[in-house]
Image (cartoon, chains in turn brown, green):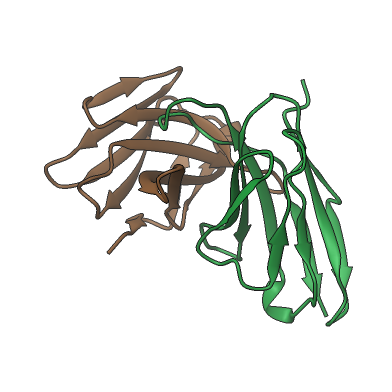
Length: 115
Length: 114
């Protein structure tokens, strides 16, 4: 079946520490993955993406790792700040209807940054 | 730079009422999407459109209708509101060509059916 799930529904970290948010996906045909951040009362905000021909991609303070062998995705946030507190979703892209892409969202992980 | 704009932000409806959720984007994106997000859950696709005049069903289309008369606008219609449609609705768009492009989201419409 098609599913994208997260191991930890809530992650609490101290300000300044590094955060790691994990995600498992089930469809080995998926070739594009996105991490979104959703703050309270807002829509999902694009953070970083990665294609299946890559193992790692870095952005500003964020790194996404992809392990296709075990179908696992992670988001690493360096020096976590209070402004990073939000729900983080991974999303898996599958072909859908031949005309666009089906974006499969996981249920989300709440990142709580403690001062 | 407005991006994706949704109106209204909040709405309370009575069972059986109808309403239209508005979505407009100023990025000249051909692909547009409607999702619903239930509490503590991820997003589920309701309908999508690949361009003006073209729409198709997503995972959970029952009880909804859409139209796409222009590139900018993609309204979502609820004809007979039911309590099960209480949710937060998000509109999104993305550029094309290429499937490996992220979708950009509006801030949502919070809808309660009582």
